[in-house]
Image (cartoon, rainbow, N blue to C red; front, side):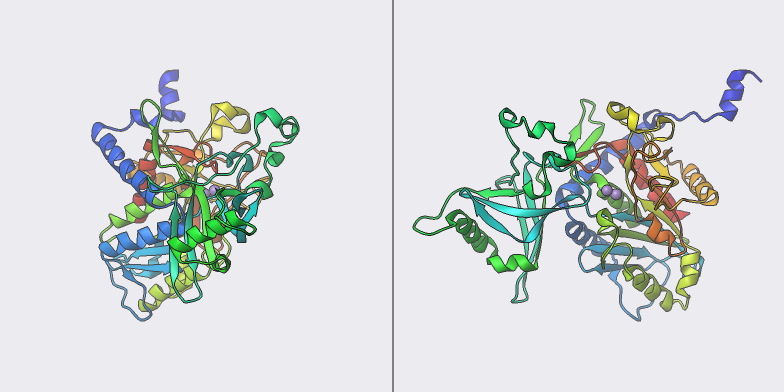
Length: 461
Ligand code: MN
Ligand code: MN
């Protein structure tokens, strides 16, 4: 054998995904990404993504879970967990005793949440106080056009949906930064301190109401909110209002190969697994799609992946087939569909480039996440890695292997550990992202599309 022949038969030779797709796949990729971009513009919070999923699911015949309902092959069932997270299942021809093929992504993203008592006036400028949610570089958020999304639950029992900054005619909100001319001290600070948490105050307005009195700018803002939403200041105490970038999803690059958006992490995987599930009819095993909340702050709380809402859903399905929950979970498989860091040559020193995902090389499989000696990781076994390699290859999915940065450089986690704790074989895989957790993130169209194909392959495995 020549060395060339040996090289071909023995060594890995990853190829850019664009060399591996045909014209038809390319057209499908473009139309998939167009629909994805519309989804991203419509859904910037977990509540909006959940509501979108419920509406689409019902159009396709999914029924809300009910105690005592029959669970037969081909049935489509979902559980809306308090409007903030959703689990959907297409029941397989095999019994639930043979397990569920699960794809689990999250639909919350880093942002700024309003504090419970947010509205104040300082120097005749009205502001909202915020508390950032998830891991952000705080200095990235000033001078970005911002929108306000969320709900206000009033004492009379009504809930008002708030959305300011998305319609073309809407105003936007903004956090200010210090002018460079006076930044001698600021420029000496570390990036963690350049903008501090208590400086992430969102500007709401500057025009005082006519007449006498104090805080007339604040009063003006409260009057506008009252006119639009019928709310009073005390209603902020029972509200969830999120400040997110107002920007729309855009194609990026002269070749339009990338997409910028707020919150690709992790709605890019959430959309992929949802679309893949919606295309299923009569899978062999039951397929389940999970859109979780609170991943960015540790998967905690009633709508996070550690919540027993998952057991409630699966056990209710199992009861209908006289299957024990523990038997179903032990036979299940979970793709923890979450984004990875795409290799960025601008910051090459932070990664091991031999083990890092790259743009346009397809969905990236992460055997383990965690940090410092794999701490906190769900380290997928060799057997699980074989299963996913084979599943993706058999389905013609373009995929790559990934780790999250250099050893001891940092790290991260996903819902994988919480699924694995339930005795479910689990592995992380998802779309590589540039500028993860920045107000706008970048992904490649090809990787988005391959991730949808990957989720489909998992459901059908
Ligand atoms: Mn994520
Ligand atoms: Mn994240």
